[in-house]
Amino acid sequence: QVQLVESGGGLVQPGGSVRLSCAASGSFFSINGMGWYRQAPGKERELVATITSGGKVNYADSVKGRFTVSRDNVKNTVYLQMNSLKPEDTAVYYCNAAVTIYPLHDADYWGPGTQVTVSS
Image 1: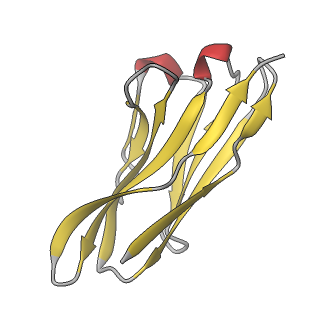
Image 2: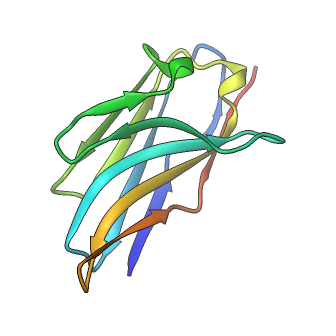
Image 3: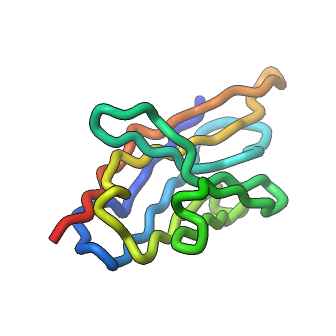
């Protein structure tokens, strides 16, 4: 019912920047919270940043001051601007959306993930 498609990952040098996008499509009543999570090899998936429909944001301590999450409620798209990238930011980044679908109830959706590799 809801599909999330990420784009924007790739290989970037340390200190560089990359912008991820995630567009939601399908049939739903509303998109509530959206956000980004990441999973590095051998590690558990962890929260990176979230944003509510009203624009309230939350960041992991490890990315504060370097990453910025934003969203376009008309396009049903969430973005993650990542600056000053470090090798430890290397991971698969997953988009998440908390959605109210029909018949009205809340559901959680994930994108397939996009790889971000920070390396020289």
